Image (cartoon, rainbow over all chains, first blue to last red; front, side, top):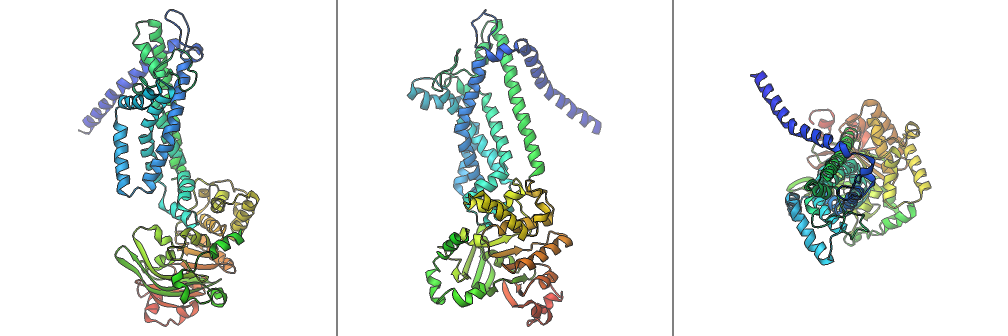
Length: 272
Length: 282
């Protein structure tokens, strides 16, 4: 029986790994074809013209994530601190509930929301609108991760700070948050990679652009939307570019989550 | 630094209500008595944990509080710098006068009280992400001290007074958590001394330490009492006998006996005290 059970578990694990590994294999094998310097430094070229790249989309995605972080990080971290440090009230319970609801909202709905309150009044697609949509998505993720890691800071440290005659708000910002800072930073990175791989909320906010965007109020290319555009096109060279785009995006996400996981384990080992 | 904060401290209105009871507060008696506790009652939720405590704590002496677990000695200690307020559902009634100033009044900022009356806890609590230097400097920095030379000097003198300087002077940039338990506890004492503390409250500071580290802390208390007023809660009666001038014995939230340590341990006035120190209960 024991052997049978182990065999069953092993098979289940193998079955679960097959899609993941074949996905990796497919993306790498198809993506390597155009994985060259041109891809990183050139603008997209018309169909049939050899070469060309996604430089504008790479920069565009970075811009979008930067704007999203400016929107989402302060609000998310502040909300998380509120939940962990003053989180006993009924209001906090409500905030926690809505944060969970918000993180479950389909991302396309967030995109419509940003379209309605930024794109329409400003009469145009922009990185600002796309960044705002992504930032909105970051808030609940960051808030809940921040709450969790800040809660891990022992009460005795909070007491020690208060006993030094440090006002509560200062002890939260400079002692409690500082103790949990690497955990919070991990949360920020995870949230950033999570939204960097979003497509839906960008379709009608930052839209797309075959050239460099001149400033954050212009339609802006992003890797995800560019991959989408290329992948559904009937041209082979564009579809090759889509595969390479997918590979690059995958690598970025993989590297960042690997790095954040490593800092988190290191932090758990030394501090908490 | 001291001047500014002294003014701040003296700014505490000696609570209108308590003023009549304190004609000419300050001057003669206050110089001798650092803390005067009058009719102090405390509750945790519905449960009363202190019953009418009246105790005078003399300046530049070590006062020890002993008694079985749950007798209220830690609660009493935490009331002395209003740390009891950090536990939700705590309520107190009565008076505590620090140099003649009422400190329990609502108009008094607990933050100002804690800057003068510092506390060291049972478990050493260095801030783990800060270096040894920053652990000591952080109190004064967060109180707004910008002069880095002054911070430097205060950190050194505090570490010296806590008898830790020689052991850490070459590793000031290492994390506070890299020290041994006894060193961490002395670091916490140094941290408390680096602000304008003149009363030091210690809540079983040695119960997590080995005998050698304990001896070092006791030696340190002996040094410190020439300039600080020290109140120590301890489970260890030998420790109380070794380090303190006065001993307070508590039971079930009441003060049973308070007197010179020598007398309390050799000729206790109360039968209960004698039973406790001879190990008949507790």
